[in-house]
Structure formats: structure tokens, C-alpha cells
Amino acid sequence: MFELTRVAGESYYVESPAKIGLVKLGGDEVCLIDSGSDKDAGRRVRQILDANGWRLTAIYNTHSNADHIGGNRYLQAQTGCGIFAPGIECSFTRHPLLEPSFLYGGYPCRELRHKFLMAQESDAQELTPACLPAGFEIIPLPGHFFDMVGFRTPDDVVYLADCLSGRETLQKYRIGFIYDVDAYLRTLESVKRMKARAFVPAHAAMTEDIAPLAQYNMEKVWEVAEEIVQLCGEPIAFEALLQKLFIRNQLTMNFEQYALIGSTVRSYLAWLKDKGKISARFENSMLLWERT
Image (cartoon, rainbow, N blue to C red; front, side):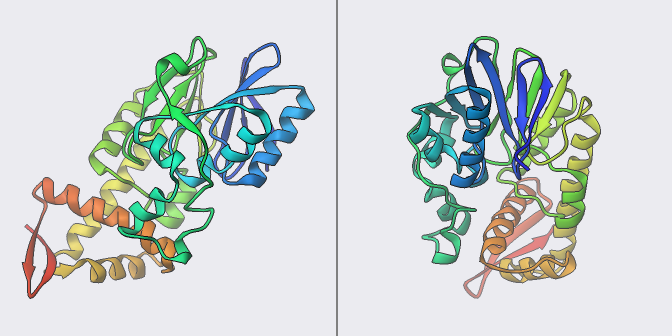
């Protein structure tokens, strides 16, 4: 873990639970794409920088999930680097209490206010093309989170953030976190058509051909959607639906999984309702979902 791997040219990544991109910019200057999950990840990255005589000038966050921005504050304090995050993600990065609050749908209890869902705040600025080094390209990747992006470097290496997961992860957990299902599927269609020298997803192995994995992720989304539609064969309340999904997929219920998967299931329900696959009605002061 935390080994530095060269992808091509000046483009690297640091192996960690969520891969951290590192790109040499010329001379001793480097930038990061995301910063890892916490202060310890930041320390490990700092050790790599020091060992190579590199100076960190900027962190470009793909999105604001805690496992991607957790090292921001430490690295910014140590190096004075700039931090840039896209759109709504910039607000979440500056005010990380927003993430567990959004996931839970209200003020989060103590079990949700921890480093895996709530990073330390960092002084981020909004990402624009003008912030990027020469030759970098911002790639919009909405769906997993609000305004998530990826980056293409001058070496034609594409960092894909969380827009897809590895096969083993999907086979084990089945229901991956999604904010906007429709946008997520459109992003996967776009990624499936991409060409690059190499692709670096945050939670899957580096590859030169991303299309098969993008297709597999799409198929898993449709499988989950179909399972939800089937469970709505009779009118069902959200909590009962969530319980059935956990039991059928052998998932362990705790506050973190309730928030993450619960938020995802609500997103599926909204998408399926908008597509006319299910309907919703209120009965005895309860919201019920039903297959159309």
C-alpha cells in the first residue's frame, strides 16, 4: 500500500484504498489528483514527495467523498499547496459535515460523524479549466456524486475517480453508491467509448481498455434496478424494501451502510419512478412504492 507506480510519461498513481494520482509538472513541481482518506494518507504521500525531492503545488479533487479529500488539510498545511474541487464538490470539501448530512437526510448522529464519511475541512477553491496545468483536461463524470470529474493528463492518462468499481467489489457488495442513476449510466456509456493510453480508476486496476469494466458496471446497475422493481410487486415502504435488499444481498446493516445504501436506494426509487417503472402513493401517513 502507498507504493508509487508510473503509468506513462510524467503520470503516476499512489496505491491506496482510493488511488491517488500524481503528475510531475516540470522541475520539482508535482500535483495530486485526490489526497487519500485521512491525515495518515497525507503523511504517506508527503514521504513520497520528500523521498523524490518533489514540491506539491496543487491538489485537484475529483469529488468530495471523504476517502478522496481526507489528506487535503494535512498536505495543504505542510506544503501550502492550492486545493481545487468542482462545482458543488467544492462546498462539500470546504464544509465536510455536508456529506454525512446529505447521506442521512438530516443532522448525522455520532456514528456517522467519522473520517470515513466526514473529512477535515480544507481551504478549497472552485475548479475551472484555468486552474489546471497546461495540457490537462477536465472530464465531467456525474452520477456517483454531484459534480464529480476525472482528468486527462498530457500523457493521455485518464484518472476516472469513482465512476466505476472493480468486478470483485461489485460481486461482493453488489449495490455501489450512486447519487443520480440516470447520470451515472450516461457517464458509463461515455467512459465505455473513451480511448486513452491508460485508465486509472480509483477503485479498480489500471487498464488500457476500460470498455469491458464500464459495461459490467452498467449491467450491475440494471440488475439492482430490476431487483428493486421486483420487490415492489406489492406496495412496500422504504424501510421494508431496504431490509429485504440487505437480507437478499447478505449485507450487514449498521449506521454507515444504512446511510450509504439507503441513499442509493432512494436514488434508484426516484429514477424508476421518473421512468414509469414504479409508482408512489401515500396511505395511512406512509409512503408506499409499487411496481406499475
